[in-house]
Length: 373
Image (cartoon, rainbow, N blue to C red):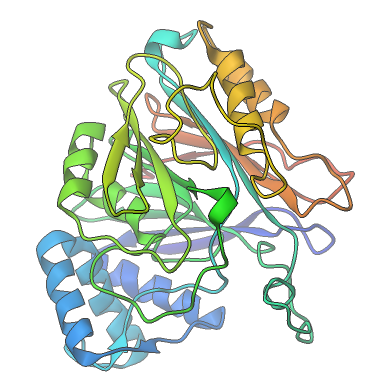
């Protein structure tokens, strides 16, 4: 079963948000998402046949849910699922990357005992062409003008609800029915460069990693083990990921420039993350000064840390903290917070507001369950 509804924004607003719900087999979910990606302009990319065969084998062993969805993609495209000339995933319709802020408030620091994660998704207001230094195409929309909330309810597997700007087989953030929440952020704003449009590689791409965890894991401990055993790659824009669960556990997953892997934890207390590598700067009170290239990452983290340190936070307090680090509506500023989300890992819900334009209120708060079973 498929249902698609406009849930926020309109023709005069910056964003028009679609909620897409798909139930059925993983094969059917893959077929529906591929058909929607094709409608948005996606087409499969060519790659080295040896790489495609290795990718499919890796997915079959490590991420069978995605492997089954790729069979559905092949059906939507009228292709043999065993062909090795085209990559049948990467259903993206704009480039990736964002400067964001997130704050995990564990049950022990929550007014009602619910673990929650709040996040601001900050991104450019520009078109893809402008970011690439090219003339705008006729009718080209801003890159983030058409986000999706996608709820998938497989017959045999974990249901989840995710928000995505640009990848229908990946996501920016989301939560599954076990209460595992995952979100991505730029890992090092000061050295970030635009993502490359390279061919897919073997393993998990940047936008696929959150979806992989929500498909295969129920707890933060399981997610950490899954990441240690997974093969990962990025396309020139390293990201890090905040992972939190319904049992009060959380960590930030990041990779150093030397390829080392780090799961950064702060014990039974709030965990703040913005756009610098936490394993390099573990002390929130000993951060460098911001520079023009740092996108305010150090100042935003200090603010979140100071507001949450030793505090008992309600859901409203968490929203107020996110509002305190939201970019100003400055015509010269490149970023806006395009959505603000609070994930309740106990209730297995995400509650979000979407940016409609400067001088306008955000959308009303929309609450989505991780599972529509």
